[in-house]
Image 1 (tube, rainbow, N blue to C red):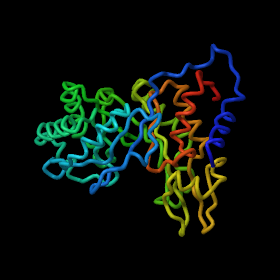
Image 2: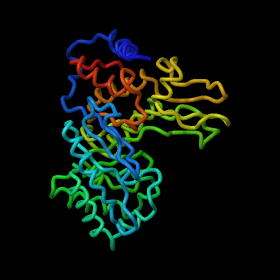
Image 3: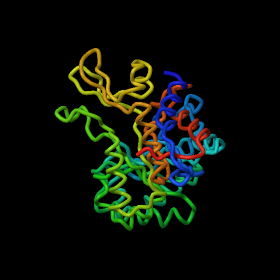
Image 4: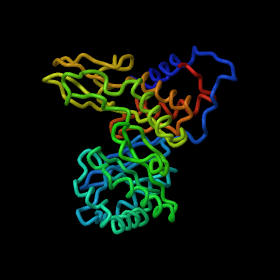
Length: 330
């Protein structure tokens, strides 16, 4: 599938929807496109292998401390951060991840809090980061996280460092409304509603209705303004079936299954079903984000994006350049 297919899908999505200027929504100039990039522990990424045009922010994931709160000293990291900032990107380091060390919970306890916050801030300043991103699993968000986040905001604010967090609706109940409101941005993780770990619950892991329900939770139930909320979009799929590979990157799906441009599920040759977001569905989510006035979209992750003309990030960027107005199709 080439760029012409993506462009056709975009035209198909909005080109036939004609509304008066009174019902159009002018695109925000500061619409954010945030991408996570996995940074291996033993080497740094080669940014020349990634599509970056149109990206506004990048989160290097995951950079975690040892049990004493010390972070790895990598001189080349500040060079990488500098190179990304020269491209006009805001750069954050992301704490946590699916396999976050258990000692993070201990470091956030009251008796360790101030020392650990100093270590976090010094690490951000030393390497030139614009701020810190939290991407913590439910088990790490306990009664200590709320006061830790408040203290982090107070300390980081003195150096104009931003704090963001990737959160799901179901993992945020232990964070108070007041503390959530201190975050500069919240990346709503509207994916992994189900997966191969739940074989009886097979189906779409990132449906459009999940996006709307999650946005309603954060915006209407938790009172977070739209300009702080970003819709999370998965550049991967989940497969069900005893012989199916459980996780597929977007680039792999687009390369192996040309029909994936027009549907959100594929019957796998070896048996089982692969569920994902097609380019059309992803574009619907971008359009929805703009229509509701959200801050932008978050992509997980950039390494899974297709390369060249098949890149979904490139398709978003092309859309930004070509469409002066948003059309309400919902």
